[in-house]
Length: 299
Image (cartoon, rainbow, N blue to C red; front, side):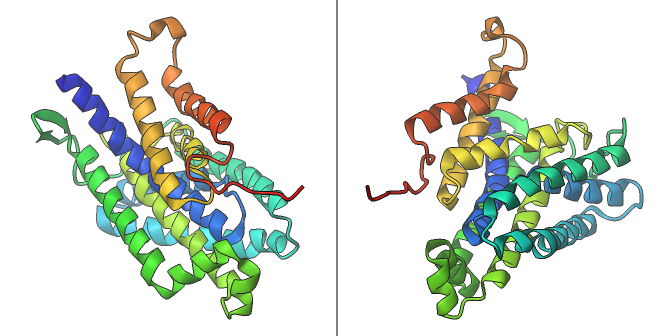
């Protein structure tokens, strides 16, 4: 029973990190109608900045984290202004989404080149410490990751509901033309959304490479890719769906990995495939995702 509880806590903790990354994809989609497929590479880039600052340059972790957030958020905003906006002005959002695939390959290739065969620790203050939760011993970083993720998700919800920019973003997602006529500056809303997606990616990345992972290596991008099915499972236009999708992906991955011996007949690496199998099953049932808006067409 304790083992199952450990697996579930791990799944919820990792799933909350996937939810953060998926939330970044969702808010960009709601603000600019572009599916940002470069979000995993932004996560990897920001985490590399943090790890490089602490390991190579001896910068304290919290300052390095701030630098990583500022750099990645700024890079995301720059991508929106220089690249994406050229497409959205012509209503070519599908072409913009495809363009982010090329951007993802370019960024990942460059970060992989810089990392090489190394494993770079981020220097996080939690290290390999453990905590006892309800009689179950889990890595401290898992508990911290869950708490931080919940704090960010709660803060984002309040920001979305009560701030001026949050109201503008919701209006843009519902009726962009009407929002523009009411004075909402759509380019500003889009830039803010892209910047926030970069912030969320770095926060998630720092925890994903923490204990029991030895640190940042070139496999991080494959881990971050699992946030894409999380966003699709929940629905690309639903912030609450991003949370549900992230938790489903995290739990499916943790359960398959935790009980891999019993599932050995299905072959190796099933934990990598599990999120995509869940996505496939959900899309067969609900093509728009669990909480996505269903489009109705008059015939």
